[in-house]
Length: 452
Image 1 (tube, rainbow, N blue to C red):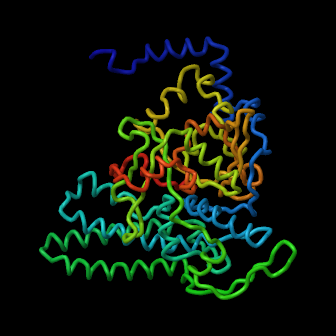
Image 2: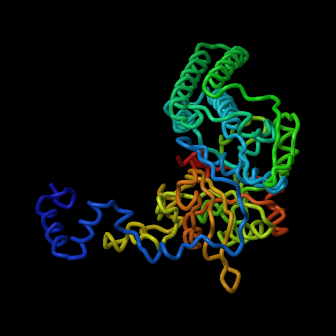
Image 3: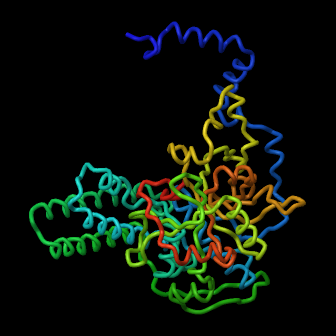
């Protein structure tokens, strides 16, 4: 046998002896085995470069907590919306229900999944497309466009109108059993089709399945309110808003956000996605009648420019990133200079690929959505540090906030959502008029923000 193809005891002994002959290697081994990789690679000077004071900053209410769920995209979206309510009525704090959109998202995703099953009845069960559809029919994650569709259709409600349940704050059990039910539903639809039944029969079956999904969700999450009473008091204790509202009426009155003005911008520097063009992702969405997602791909410098412009106008910015990279989670610091992984190991680990290569080779994608609420600028007006509102509660990071260095933004931020008025005329024209290129369902830009 060719020794170049196999691991050998002799080869290992040589590497071991060379490793142990190095003082730095021995120290690294002892530090990592005792503390773990991130703590051993932590750079105190890098941590110190992350203060929590900002040149441009919006002031939010109390921190929210997504608990043991993958609803970060919902929390980030609702945090951008509740800010408007807090500001409009001069409230100390305020929170919108996260269980309410969760109910409708699971219902709409179930419908979306079954529609995709009906659309792929003649695709092979072991083919990549059907296998992908079956892999995660109603996962917790999502995109801004999907949340916008939910709000346009169902509105929003205060947290008191639909509070958290055991299944909303810890979605694993609900997701597990609903996924099992939906896979069984897919099996029945495909088998009925194979038996020669027509589409009318299949759609009747699907309607019955959706009734059962609704019953399942009511059992887990309760009944979503169709109307509710509201009494909001401002910082001085004065009544600022009172009355009875439907969810749609409350959104119009208390939030007042022009949803269609807000657009998703991505920055993916891969050869298959030229900048200054629009993209969508095949079979990604939730509300069938509202379609899927739409992105404009721009250089990362443009994402920063529009984010700063919106922050200067005293409005927070929804963004998506790969949160686990170069991240000191307990301290809430996203900074490529706060961890020295390559120095710890003595060869490129973190630095073995650039941004585009990480996307192409499956090393990176969007895993978490949060909110930009501040930025520091240098003398030339360029960003140096960003303030981030997370959705992991007030005990995370520094009172629930993270900081993100601008070099980290360069490497791991993939999406921002801003008012389209901040785009250039050419960018806006492309977004509004160009037919988007359709990306494969498993494209990294189709990843859903779901970090728990």
